[in-house]
Amino acid sequence: MNDIKNILPDFEPPLNKNRSYIPVCEPDLEGNELKYITDCVKSTWISSLGLYVNKFEKSFSSFCNVKFGIACTSGTSALHLALAAIGLRPGEEVILPTFTMIATANAVTYAGATPVFIDANPNTWNIDVDKIEEKINNKTRAIIVVHTYGYPADMDKVIAIAKKHRLFVIEDAAEAHGAEYKGKKVGSLGDIACFSFYGNKIITTGEGGMLLTNNEKIARIVRILCDHGFSKKRHFWHQYIGFNYRMTNLQAAIGLAQVERVDKFIKNRIEHAQLYKFFLEKIKGIILPPDTRDRKNVFWMYSILISDDFKINRNQLRIQLASEGIETRTFFIPMHLQPVYYKKYYLGKFPVSEDLCRKGVCLPSGAMLKKNHIKLIASLIKNIST
Ligand SMILES: *Cc1c(COP(=O)(O)O)cnc(C)c1O
Image 1 (cartoon, rainbow, N blue to C red):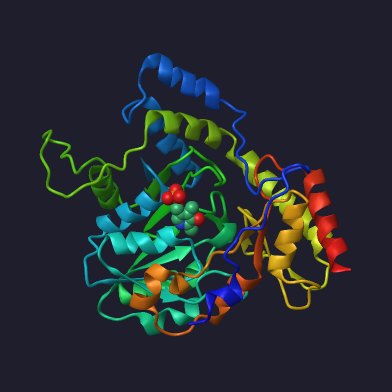
Image 2: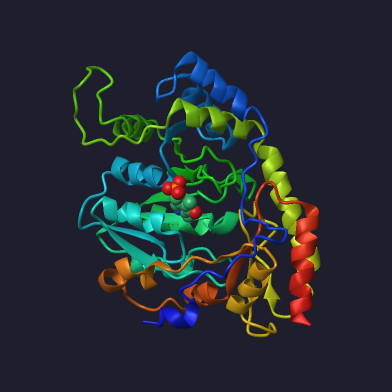
């Protein structure tokens, strides 16, 4: 095991909040959010029954060009519902990238199954599709792809592999609302897609998630599983062990207001990315995020690599930016290095993911970020580099 101390220090750099503090992510709630929430409270429909849940499901699923949307409590519960809906069982395996946020792997663990980790591709930072087939065996049931930081994974290859081996494809699109692969929205590409609406995601409901699918049978089961396994025909009658993963009307009210402005949020993030690129691309030792013509990256987090050619290392850069009031995030620590997964599931080597973890930093990217913030951040990085 690569010693984690060589990759990441076990502290966060102290943030200077006396300076012009720039948070890494801040939501924009300046549309109809307050109006719709007020409507919920005044009408007393604040639990999971109520008109906004249905409206939010319809508006977000049609934004993604998918037939069915089931709102739930989080991106994590959407992933768990997806795996429960395909009937994943203990002893079975699910393939997923090691370079992801832990919820992707935990959902597999909740189902009692085994996550099988794959390294990242150095160019896309997403699952290395050429390493998937060697991990497939008769216990494999599904492949979860993650559209990391808003850049779509290599879906054509993943879908071809899944077809050949009769596996389900689940998109973890928690970071990629509105991203596109060859002109199609992510979330519409696999069998099931899972979105998160956590506070720092491209659209937010505070906490929340949604499962999307074009498969009517899966949609029907997910709706039941999400609601305690209640039969739709007879109340208090249960054919499945379900969950209470229902989204509240309050959250959906915020979600609906967010979807109304999602195009603006995405446009903003892409413009911010273009500005970051303009200022940073000529700096030696800075590697910009993947951005190719066949895909629309929505730049959930503007993420760069600080290579060994840069004047100081990634950790030192974070400390310096923090002292100027600029909050940053490191990249994900790969799953195979996590204390909870290391012993059980560590098989093979994952050098690309470890390299990303060592060099990666997410710069401020929220909806409230201003152009002069980006100018300031970029000029600080440039000054450090010379
Ligand atoms: C945020 C995130 C999740 C989890 O979403 P929650 O709503 O916080 O449960 C899952 N997968 C990825 C890739 C994420 O970034």
